[in-house]
Image 1 (tube, rainbow, N blue to C red):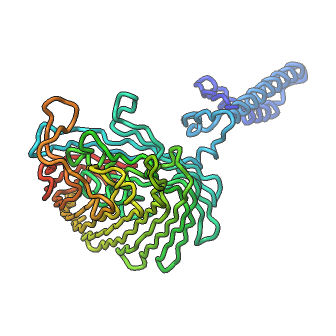
Image 2 (image 1 turned 180 degrees about the vertical axis):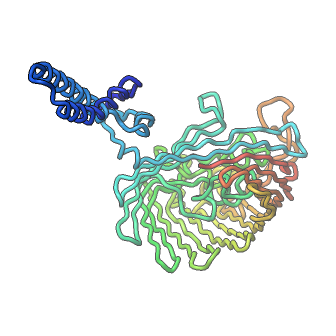
Amino acid sequence: MKRPSVPVTRQRARHLARALLAPAALGFAVSALAAATPPASSEQRLEQRVEDLAEQLDALKAELARLQAERALAPPASVAAAPAAAPVAAGTSAAGFEKLSLWGYGEAYLTHPTHVSGESQADLARAVFGIGYQFDDRTSFNSEYEIEHAVASSGDVGEMEVEQFFLDHQLTPWGSVRAGLFLMPFGLLNEHHEPTNFYGVQRNFVETLILPSTWREGGFEFNAHGVSGLSVSLGLTTGMNLAGWDYAPEFPPYRNALELENNGAAPLQASHQELSLANAQHPSGHLAINYTGLPGLKVGGALFSGNAVEVPSAPNAPPTGTMRVTLWEGHARWQMSGVDLSAVYAHGAIGNTAGSNLANPGSPNPIPSAFYGYYLQAAYADGLNLGRYRLAPFVRYEYYNLGSSYAGAAPAIPAGSVPLSATPGDYGLWPKGQDRVWTLGANFYVTPNVVLKLDYQTFDVNRDFTRFDLGLGLAF
C-alpha cells in the first residue's frame, strides 16, 4: 500500500522548532529559579511554576513525537515525485513482461513503368509485427505477423498471414533445435529480408523467383555453430505441392515487373505451402553451411530436396510418377572499408514432369524441369556521409530463367497481342519467363533503421517492365 505524503507546513515547522528548543529553555528556567531562592512564603508559587513548566515540557515532547512519526511515514521527495507503477494484469508479473520482446518492419513504394505509365502503382507493401518470449535461458519463442497491401479482406488483394512461429531450445553452447514455422536458411536475403538490410526498393529477382521470398516451411531444424566461424543447419520440413499447378491460365500470370514478383508465377512460388493446411505426405530435407571466420566475409550454400505432391493424372492415363524437387544455391558477401560486394547463384529442378506436361498439350505454362538465376552486386555502403545521414549507391546485374528446360512439352506462348485481363481493350504481349536486369540506385539512411530508396531498372527481354522505383523502409 502506498504511504500518503504529509506536507510540512509553516505552522508544523514552528511546532517542531519549539519542541527541539523546549528542553534547553526548561533547563535555563529551572537554573534561574534555583539561583533566585525565593523566601519561604513563595515556596508554593515556585512549586506551582515548576509543575506548569513540567506540563508544558510533556506537551512539547508529545508534539515532537507526533511530528517525528508523521515524518517517518512520508516518503522522500524523490520517491513521492516518481509516477506510480503501471498496473499488472491478473495472472502476469512484471518479470513476465521483461521476458517479452517486440519488433517489426515495413515498406511502402511507388513503382512507375517508364514505357507503360498507366500501370504506375503506389502500395503499402507490408507491415510486419513480431512477438517473442524468453521462457528461460535456453528456451525462446519467436513469431511474425504480416499484413500485405494495406487491406486484407475477401474483396481486396491484401493478405494477413503468419510469417514465422517457432520455438528455439539451446541444447549445448554450440547447438540448438528449432520447431515450428520458420524461414529457410537459403541465400543472403531470405532470413534477413527487412528493407534496411538490402539495396533497392524491391528484393532482387533471383531471391524472389528462384529462391522464394520469404520462403518458410513447417518442421524441425538443428543449428550448430563453432568458434571457427562455421555454422550448419540441418532440417526436415514440409515440401512442395504441385497438385494445383495452373496449366491453362486465361490471361498472362503477370504483366509487369511488380506482378512478376507478387503473383506467385515462379515454380517454387507457386508450390511452397507455408504451413497453411500443408500436405505433409512427402517431407523434405535441407542442409545449409556458412562460413564467417574472416572479417567482413560470408560464404556458403544450401541444398533442399524432397518429393512433391504430384499433379493428378488424367483419367485413364498412367500415373505421373514421383516428382522430386531439388534446389541448391551458393552465395558470397564481402564487406570491407565501406565496399559491399555480393553474389548468389541458385538452381532448381523438378523430376518426372513429362507425363503431366504431355497430358496438357498446348499449355503456355507447363511445369519446367529446370530453372535458375544469379546476380552480382556492388555497393558503397559509406558512399556519402552527411552528418547523421548516409547515402549508399549500388549497382546490380541479374539473370533469371523460370524455365531453362522442359520435359514432354515446351510452353506454347501465344504470338502477337493477347488479352491481358477481362477489361475490354486491354491487350499486350505474353511475357517471357527469362530476362537480364540492370538496377542502378541508392539507399539513403535517415537512421540505421529508417531508409529512403531510389532505383532504376532496365529489362533486356521484357522491355516494357523497365521502371523507376521510390521506396520507404523501416525496421525496429
